[in-house]
Length: 52
Image (tube, rainbow, N blue to C red; front, side, top):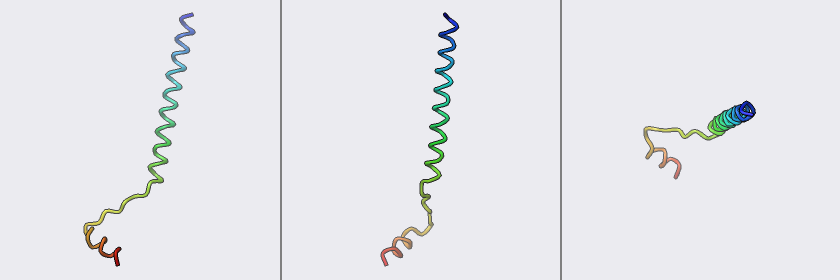
């Protein structure tokens, strides 16, 4: 009976680790799709150029 509970606990731990890995992979995909902001040294000049 103890072996049953130990195996059940091991399955639960393995499942949690799998879910954690899937969440990390999904977060990486989201980060890859996120637009990257371009940093410039002359922010005022860029803003003035946009206003036209």
